[in-house]
Image (cartoon, rainbow over all chains, first blue to last red; front, side, top):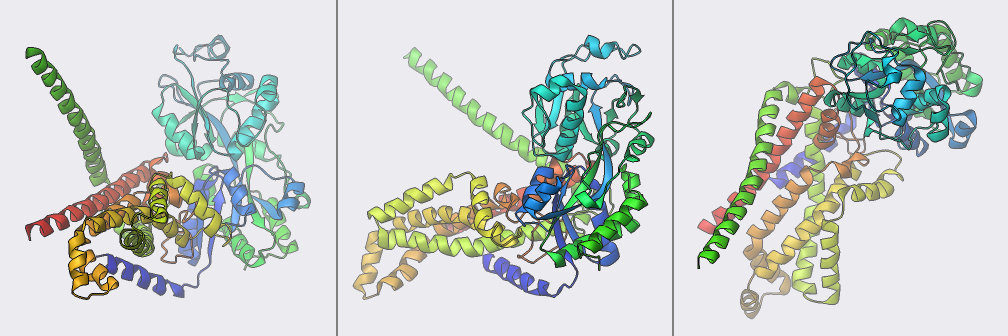
Length: 336
Length: 277
């Protein structure tokens, strides 16, 4: 039996020499992973080329592309130009997504719960411990909140979603800024950790009276309930696509600094406050594989807007896409 | 007298109870695996590759083939190494300091956390090569196999009576012939059981593959590329929030379970058959 298995294995290895399609591998952020899976699946059907994307978190993506283990990395935390120079990476955005505060409260409907931005910080700091805390109750007079302990769910891996979320919390709560701060992996005061947006979603489903933060696509796919929160100026804003778009309008990415810009807390009457671009990182010296990678994203920019919208992401505006194409041209990695 | 009887009965009841608790959980696990796994099984699993959540044409073909290749290559590397090393220990090294040192080391290796082996192989076979690849996964599994095969081979060869060897020498057989034709023949059943156990042991490992063979959403038989495996796919799918992926995770668990179970049963059957003869 063993001999046979070994022989089959060897012959299979030999057969596989003949494939001519592009095969590239990428890893990183779980935030855009559902979309990249979709794009890669359709791209394979359309062109025969394989893009193997693995969702390991933005921290892992940055690490693996810096070590030149994968062909491209993906991160929702943009790297500053200085860091890109140091790690010898290129960077461009691929799509825009939104982070929503999701809760598992059987008695409350989707978007019904209103949370002040600073109260979100207090919940994740462990200062607000029960769902019927005065701070929450006074904003939700119409809801009968249960006297249940809040279970906080956060990320356990290095995460760009965490980066953007903690960036938001640091700007709405002085306490958060002082005690926890901003980062991909944090010293969480309370709660349990899940790996990836997938892990948080899984835990949230199983844990009644829990609260967490995920990319909007995960909320949609899992029919989670998301909280109504506040704009930069303190107006209530629902976690719906038109409000995400209102915030995304303020994106002013420029190729000069490798599109570095954080989109959290944009101005505007109806701008949802936690919107984020998600970025692709390329090793500078690998011109040939980079061409293959950008061919994929070029295809996705042309044919992938529908998938993006269906899943709940915001496709990049045409001007940004054009800028990215010019950026590719300038660094000598035009798509094939 | 009565006191002794009472104590005896209490202890007997306790140990029966412990055995029943163990069995209870074993059957519970098997039952969950079978009921959830069978529900998720269909022909689609063997025809289609892993796909994004929500797609119709979604299966595990790439993961199943990847798993077979990884385990096959790991066996091809690990088994000969383990048998040769075990033979050395039993027939040449015997009770020398060096041989005992190797025995100790391999005992330690056997209990080394598999994730550590994964990290080690990442450092020697992934980082220098510049991409995740199937070879690295197979080597990581092979490293786990070697100490198991080595120790069982060593033990089994030791069980072959010294007189048999002496008889063969007396007939004028050289040492290599004695080992191959007398010792191996006598210890065959035990050695094969050890091999099967080592295969069953590594077939269910996820940790050594996580950052060596990594994972691949596409079908591949090329060991130079990242390779999908049932275990890593199961880990990713079972912890995902998507209904269809979770079901595929159960199917992967069921397939793995059946594979490991049948390897184990095969091992038992071989032993039984020999005994009848």
